[in-house]
Structure formats: structure tokens, C-alpha cells
Length: 112
Length: 114
Image (cartoon, rainbow over all chains, first blue to last red; front, side):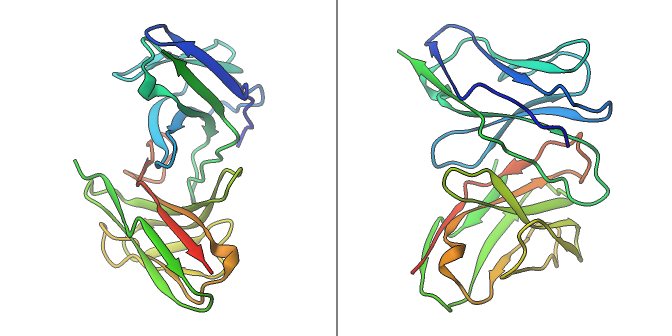
């Protein structure tokens, strides 16, 4: 699976949009981009995923560049409860294990 | 919405004891897996199952056993606990093994081995 690079930390003012970048320059054509987050002491929470097209759900939007080498997770109106570590993961179809590689992620702090 | 339920939430064991960590999901998911998370490290895959009756090893299977007799349940057994198994254990499930299916995680079991 392709590796990802994320900034170690970011701050965002409450109520503003949080834009979290991720580089995955070695991504293959069949690899999906996933975003999860982990709020302190809880299990990882699925946020959104995509292959080529931009995606939006009730939690966030995912913008994938045309060459698929990078993506941005957008939380449109950050709240204090969005403070967490955010993980960008790329994963390809597997015949065996769907092993998610959680790197170090981006620690997002939402500031009142 | 129960999702993925793990019990117990916390456990302290003595070296050499055995125990079973429970994981249940109510989403009729085929794929289930166990990860461990150590401080400052990412999640590492212990065992996984692509369906009832089928299990296989992940990256770090030594010292652990699993079984999958039903679609809903995927227990993880520690055979003889060692201090190196002190960790937070997460169970996850997804509709299928394919990477276009998101995995959903439980809230974890925090295990300390003395």
C-alpha cells in the first residue's frame, strides 16, 4: 500500500473550516483514500473515503487532486469535539487481510 | 446503533494468565479483525476473518488465538499473558474484505499485564 505524509499538527478556530492535507504521491490506480480520526482513548472513527472523485457526507468533504497524488479532508465548521488525531490512509483491494496502516496522523486542535 | 461492541473495557492480568477479549457486531459484516495499539505507534493487525469459520494471521499473531463460529462474534484469546501484550486492543468490522468498504471500530479493551 502507498505511504502517506501528513503534517504532525494543526490548529483551527471553532466554527471555521478545517482543511487537513495528505500527500500520497505513490498511490496506485486501484487504491482508495480513507480518512479516520481517533479521539482520545476511543476507537478509530471512519470519516470518509474516495477513489477518484470528490466525496461529501454528513461529517466532511474529501477533495482528491486530479493526479490523485494528494487529498484534503475538509471539516466545514469545526467544533471542539473535532479535536482528534486524523489519519489519511490509502489501501488497495486485498484477497486476504484489509490491513489499515495508521501512520502518525495530524493532531487537530480546535481552539475556542 | 450498537455497531462494534468490545468487552471488557479494562482488564488487568498477571503474567501467565489467559483470557478472552470479546468482540461482537450487529451489522451482519463478513470481515472482522483485531488490532493492537501501543503508545506512540500505529495499529498493528493481529488476526482477521473474512467470514464465519475462516480466520487467518495478521502481522503480530504470536500469543493470540481467534475463532469465528458466528458472523457476529470474533473473540481474541490470550493463551498465556506476557507483559509485552500490554496494549489497547481494537476490534473492527466491514461489510466485506474489499478496500472499498470502510471498517468500523469498537472502543477498545485496555489490557495491562503485570
